[in-house]
Image 1 (cartoon, rainbow, N blue to C red):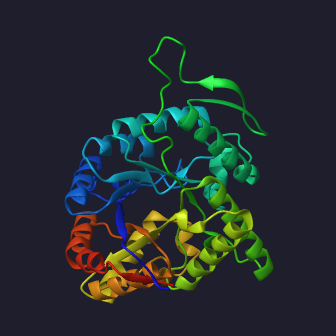
Image 2 (image 1 turned 45 degrees about the horizontal axis):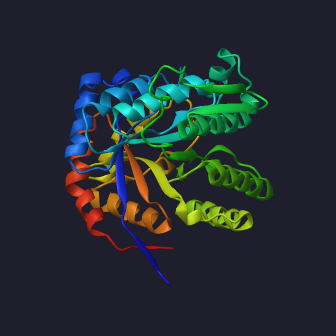
Length: 349
C-alpha cells in the first residue's frame, strides 16, 4: 500500500554568514528569524562549530531567536555535543527549552571526520578518535537529566553520583518543558568515507543502531544527486529496527539541504559556488558543487524536493547558499513553498 504524508520546512539562518557576508549581521539574522515564521516555515535552525568554521555560538543565538518568534520549532543543525560537558549542556538546553516555550529540537552529532574538527577536539584536550563513545554517553546523561531531573552514571568518560539541578530549597529540579526535547541524531556516512562496500554497510548499520537507540529523529544529508543513498540508509534503518524490535517509522527523517534559487541554473550556480567556497574552505574542495544541493530556477528546485520527499524525507532544513539570505528565503516562500505545500499526498517509496 502506498504511504502518503505532509512535509515540514525549516530554514537554517546561517550564523556563520554574518562573518563572511557584509550587510548580514546579527540584527539582520534576528529579523530573518521573524520573517521565516511570518512566511509560513515550520522551524528555524543555526549551525555549530568552535573555530574550524567560525560562527556565532548556537545556544546563545537560539535564545535570542526564541524571543523574536512564537510558534516555529528551534534547533541546531547540528550541535556538536560530544566536546561539551553534558552537565553544562543539560542546563543550557533546558533553559533554552523553557524560554522558548518548549519549542526546541535537539539536533546532535559527534563531529565530522575532518581536520578542522579534529583540531577542535585536540584544543579541548579530547580524544577525537573516541568521539562516538563520548557522544553516546553524553546523550545518556542528558536524557536522564531531562526526564528524571537527576542522574547517576558510571561510564568510560563520565562518572556522576546523584547529580541534579536541585539543592532542596527550590520548588523542584530545573528541567525543560519537553521531557525530553526530541533528539534528532545526525549521521551522514556516505558523505564522509569512500570505504569498501562491506565496510560501508557496517558503518551504516552502526549509525542506524545509534539513531534508533538515542533518537526520535534522524538528521542527515547525502550527495544531492543521489537520492538512492537516502533510500539505502532508510532500508538499513528498517532492517536494524526489525532486528531490535524497534519501529523505524517512529523517527522523523530530516534532511539539511543547501540550495540556491535563481532566474537560471547558470546564475544560481555562480552564486552558489561563491558561497560554498567561503563557507566551507576545506570541505568545498572535497566534493563537487553539484552534490552540495540543487541550484536553478524554481521548477528545478521543486523537482529536487519532490524526489527527496518521495525518497523518505519528512522535514527539510533549507540552508540558502547565497550572500542574499532575505532574497532567497522570500523567493523560496513565494515560488517553491506553495507548490510543495499543496503536494499533501506525496507518495513515499
